[in-house]
Length: 124
Length: 253
Image (cartoon, rainbow over all chains, first blue to last red):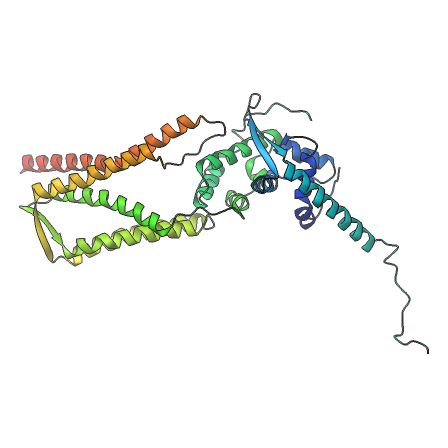
């Protein structure tokens, strides 16, 4: 679990594919998604960020929803991945892995050692 | 994954926060069923996380904006607004004519140039107000609400001023005939409203997920029917008050 929150702009780019990945483990509800993301090290995602994202995924038909009665309290809205959602996770997941590998290479300290200064002239 | 028992979230979702969210979503033309869904999501998440709504979801207006960004707008067209405003105006004119015929002294109701011009003025003002309130889409908060109230007050003041300044008589209608016309407009408008309510209920109530749709429809019909008979109700009360005042003044005199 991370102690320092990741920069917001990083999360904005990666949160939807991470939520799809959590839902690929099985249908679940809002707070359970947040808790799972926190457990995986992404940090605590607030409801104000999570539900608009889930609404967009539902609108894109990547997830379906179903209300189930709560135990001694309000009901729970369960989210489940559709076939289109699973395909999107596969596509976006592969793209993210490539992107993450690429950025890891770019910021790799071994690669970022200062290169010897060049004079701009070549001997003939 | 464990599924802890959910607690009741009464203390976690302040009523003022909830009301502000409902208003912000209404201003963004979100349906009642969807608003009920969103409120239930807030209740569920706050109960599960043990966080209050302002902490978990932020400011209501901002949250409403987040939820509706990129969704398809459902604003009604100008023709729909014109039709709605026109229907309200028919009942309003009926109410004014009935009260005017009962409340004025003399042989008949004097229709002036000002009152004739006030009708299209009020119709236009109503449409402008409705469309201006809808266009802000919940961004305005209190300033928007104050602006709408000021526009409504200004429109009414303008209509009354027209009636008082342009007082050249156009026609004098006998009180009995004026009252009959007024009652016809009032009752006719209410009957049409009732028929519309039964055929196509438009009242869009905030409903919890899983609510029986038959009961929701019944509530919609009741709400629309009640709305349709509000102006005749005002007329009955208004006429009763005017007659009581007349009787009181006669006794004093």
